[in-house]
Image 1 (tube, rainbow, N blue to C red):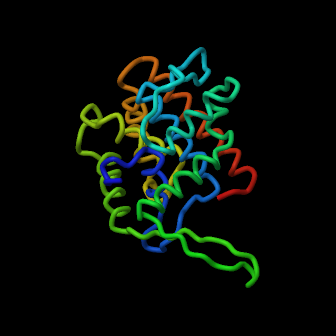
Image 2: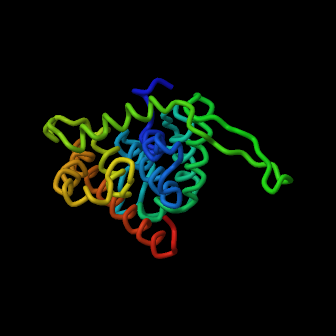
Length: 223
């Protein structure tokens, strides 16, 4: 999987890694962020559309060729209809785990076996390509801070940064910088759905649902 072809959920997962501490930040909120990225990409590809607030597959046959995205698409097809805000959280761990396994298979992460309490087998996933993550973060920061006009940013790159900012990902948007970039993030959110008015509605719904889910995580005591 070349870096340029990384899906939105894969990019968002990698952007959550702090390469200085070699650890994932915002672990409690990350499954929802990854799921929001997958929903956004399926909508941008035209495979999920909006039907009065319901996330709706356009047909029963089309695939992306990406196992994570196709897995979510199949889940939506086989489930009863749900609103976008429901899909941001419903079984979000399934998409998160699939992204992690995909990145491990492609060599971005490394699985290390261990034993909990010296008895129970477990697996830790550690970052194997810190340079790739640093490059992705540099690209995202250029989109966030400019100087390229938002109108010249691709909808794909806009979505990555807008979602990461909505999730308050500390590796990209530290708390002290959130107000500074507020207007730019709003413009990038709009740009994420620039291809069509219907897509703008979908992107807006996903972002609203993501923020609501993260608020719930924070209230519950997550990081």
